[in-house]
Image (tube, rainbow, N blue to C red; front, side, top):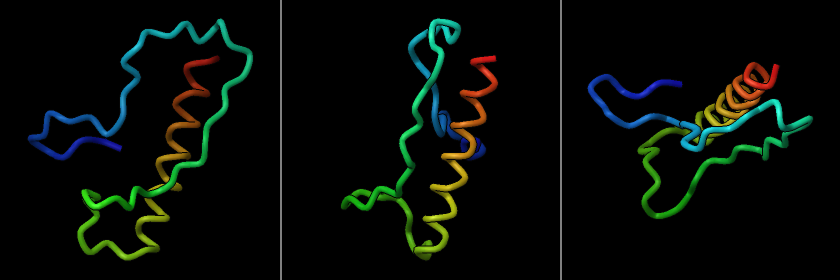
Length: 69
């Protein structure tokens, strides 16, 4: 995941410094698409939203796995 070119927004970030060695396990909640009135999916089909959520969950999990080793 990466921000759009020219954007100063990050798709996700960990703002609080974390000592990952203090934890023996982490729990990654399932990622779901936001369906609120200000959702920014435009005309992305439902399958695309599900694929995006799956991709984000995989990346969160891998990123946390790398940091904890």
